[in-house]
Amino acid sequence: MPHLMATHLDTAMRECVDECLSCYTTCEATLTHCLHLGGKHADPDHIRLLTDCARICAASADFMIRQSDVHMQICGVCAEVCRRCAEDCERIDPSDKTMKECAEQCRRCAESCEQMAAA
Image (cartoon, rainbow, N blue to C red; front, side):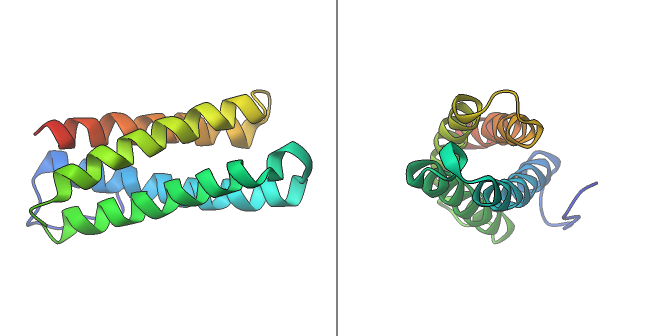
């Protein structure tokens, strides 16, 4: 279900905004999940990466919504952070459903942001 149906954005950008907002939400939920579990899930570097991913996804969506002339660069950074977050979630616990869903959402967001960055 799309988070945004702004008429001023083209379809590709609208889809990318939706992926970024979904990734933001997923990373925030995963962050809570990891802190609740503790142990390796609450490793400071992992928590920092989840937080970075959530924040850059929110920023990326914001830059696209406002049609900032630097949104492509922000999307490029977002794609890189999302890829790192996906890898880290799988590294921490590949059998955990929440971690797996986070990794999958991060990869979808990374792909969408890579396309936006190349536009």
